[in-house]
Image: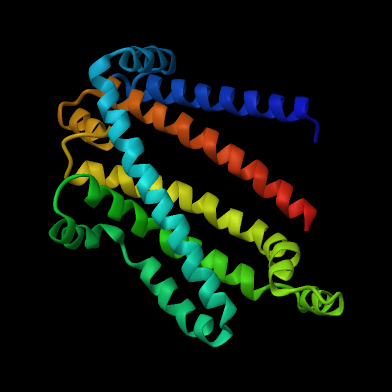
Length: 247
C-alpha cells in the first residue's frame, strides 16, 4: 500500500470517528459528552494554561519511569526464561495467571508499600505491562527456528556474533510487538493509578472533572491522551510491520 493510500485511510478513519462522536453528542447532549470541535478548542486552551502543564509533566514522568521498568524488566525476565526451556514451561502458566489478576485489587497493597505519590503510580503502571512484555520476549526466544542456530554453528560464528547476527534479528519482531502492547498497558496503569490516589497528573484531572461534572475538561484531556497514545502506537506498529516483513 502506498503512502498516499495510507494517508487517505487515516483521514477517512478520523472523519468516521469524528462523525460518530458528533452523532453521540447529538443523542446524549452536553450532560454526557462535548462535541468534537468544542473539545479540540478547549484542549488547546488547556495546553495554553501554565497551571495545566505540571499535570502533564507528572504523568509523563511517571509513565517514562514505569515504561522503562516494564520494558527492561519484562525483556530481562522473558529472555532468561526463554533461554531455559524447562523454566519457561513452568513459568508461563504462572505468568498468564498473574496477568489475569485484576490489577485494581493490588492497588491497596501498592499504596501500603510505596505510599502516595510518584512511586505508587510508577509501580502500578509497571505491573500492568511487565508480564505481557516478558511473555512476548520469552516466546520470541523459544520460537527461534533451529535452522538459524545450525547455520550459525556451520559458519563457526562466536556467541557474540550469533547473538548479533542471528538471535537478535530473529527475536526482534515479536519483542517489538510485546513492547507496543506494554506501552499501552503502562499508560493505562499510570492513569488508573492517578485516578485512585493522586493530587496531580492527567488521571487526577479526569477524575476531578468527573466529580465536578466538568464534561469539557474530561473530554479534552481524554482527547489529548488519545492523540498521544495513537501517535506513539502508530510509530511502533509501523516498526513492527517493517520488522515482520524482514523475517
